[in-house]
Length: 252
Image 1: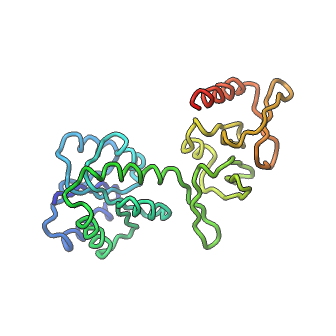
Image 2 (image 1 turned 90 degrees about the vertical axis):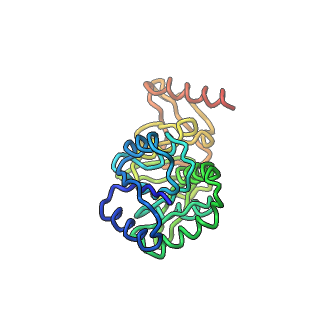
């Protein structure tokens, strides 16, 4: 079995290789790659390996970007030190997901599972991987005291920041603390569904209930859920907002 390891932490890569030597002596590690760009270049110029171990968080971005650029027809075992909420999504898609520090038993169970599932049909893993990535990117992990709650982006009515704190408000009125900036959320939320109204708000198109002209040729938005303060779109951003609305209507 030919194995490719994509991992930017030297210690983690060495640990994984040592475990593979123990649990799968016949496995041959072809290469250890450290970045998205390096991995894409290697995969484009070499035969597809039998198995990939892929760390999610690499120096130049998430390894999911590799899947965006290459159609990988091989099973992938994802590894990471966090993002535990994605574990179930990957398992449902028959793709294993190992949390660091990775143990010998973790790898042994993953290889046993892959042996049972693959049956020589490597091509079937491509849609499974893409579906797992889709579910991962559409869900946020919310830490509430001793609980971890998955929040799908379709549940979000708007995001709001104040006093260096970012909250996501759901359509049911619940508010969830986010562990990222509003700028990071804007980059992750699809532009067709969410609009950055101003420095404090990102709004979902499904939450926009009413639009009124405000002072100075600005716009005021009323949402289907209560907001901490009035949402006002500046005169300079009104054309962009109207264009966003037109694009929504055109796609419906």
